[in-house]
Length: 204
Image (tube, rainbow, N blue to C red; front, top):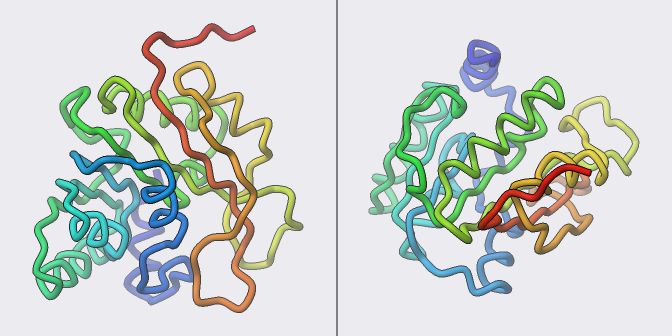
C-alpha cells in the first residue's frame, strides 16, 4: 500500500477527506440498527474523529492508519477528549490482530482505496477474519453513480461492492448517500452495512 503517499499528504495538509468531525453515517447506523457497544476497529482512522466518537459511546476502540502524522494527531485529539483508544500505525492488511476480536468494524473510504478487485476481496476477508460471529461492518465507499470528480474518492459500482463482500457478509443495507463532510456538496457514497455470515456463501 502507498504508506508514504498518505504520510506525505497528511504532512502537507492535502487531506480533503479529513473534516474534523464524526461522519453522520456512522452515528445514524449505530442508532438505527441498535448496534451494541463492544470492541470496535476503525480502519484508516485518519486523525481519529470517528474512533473518538465510538469511544465516547462506550466502545472499546482500536484504530489504525498508514500515516504516522495522522495517528499522532489522533492521539492528541483523544487525550483532549479524555477518551482511550488504541492507535496503530501500519497497513491494516499486515497488522497482526487476533481473529474474532471485534464486534464492529468501520471503514470510511479505506476499502475503495484498494488497488484492484483482488486487494478488495483480501480486505473483505481480513475484516471477516477479525469479526466475531454476527459482527457488523459499516463501509463507506465512493459511489460510481456520480461522475468522477477532479478531486474526489475512488469509486465503486454497487455490483462490484456487493459481489466482493457477499460471500462472507449479509448485506443488511446498501444505500446511496454522501460522505459526512463540511463541503457544500460532499462526494456521493455507498453506505454499506454488512453482517458476518455464520457460514460463507458460495459464489455462483
